[in-house]
Image 1: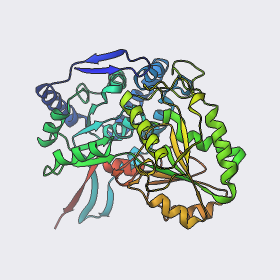
Image 2: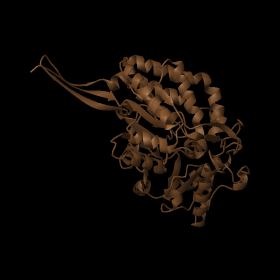
Image 3: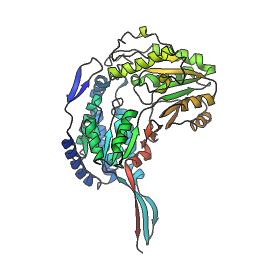
Image 4: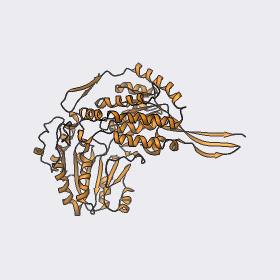
Length: 457
């Protein structure tokens, strides 16, 4: 039995039984039959139907916002994810025909040589709880439009998000069985992967989870996409507009209660502006309100689970024992009672060898260091086991691009953070994983190339 315990008050918010292995096998068999017909539907029609499925989420947006607060603690003042989901989904629908068209090599009376993109068949999406719609839609939409069936296994913490997707697919009239939404235990998923039930598996979650997926898939040659989090850094340069941009920047560490794989967790500030920037971001964080996410005034809600909050508390405490200086007085956040509600924190006097600056925090905390040069900042940013994203804060685009070329990450932002442009590939390196979502490359991830050499001779 999967139980969704709300971080708001510790109550049981929802529960349901896990699907059995036989139930999953039967659903997959049905999905294969539906997929064989679905792939014959023209791309434009597939895209239109998937678009309608996503549009259906708009009709339940208010309910989704409340559900997110109860399920994983996001304050209602920030709304849901439907707007960004639509942006990504609609862009992927708009580019589908161009992204999936054959690569023509030769078309003559004697020969036709080309490369087509073929669907894998059934795509497994293992989605996380922190952005339950946005992370899932990155694969669901291109997979379906490309002609695949989709099996969605959502996190138990946000299992209602899977239901919302399923409702949308049904409302849009997708073939019965083409989209599966089922809660499964890890062992069941592992068995299905070992049985080659899926042509492609996309997993978003922890490094340990990604390693587990790779282990069970070993020898099956199943294609795998992995997004395993990050320890993202920001570099603030001496020409940074403190008054205009500091609040936006520190929000990139605190939004969603810091529960974002691309949150700023390491902040490197050029020496000439260090004091001003630090003063400003401390002021912003001190003005946040920790509390019940259903309260419209709350800007930081509870962590999704007590164990997540405890892990961050332990990480912060260890850093302080090692010499870090806390800049935020915990007394400003009385709701932090040792449960799911966790006060935000900014730590100075940190070093890159502290676990606090190396291990993913996934909470409303950030470490701050002073740097003397671009070279030092680049070295510190790259000194990480993760490689998801980084942000550069400057008015010099040429300088930013030069620095970005040297960073070992999948995405670099300038004067922006936590925004996934659907025209750009969302990817990473090192312990962040492999593969790519969104953009034309997102379609390449959920299809395989197939070559045609048709000759009259």
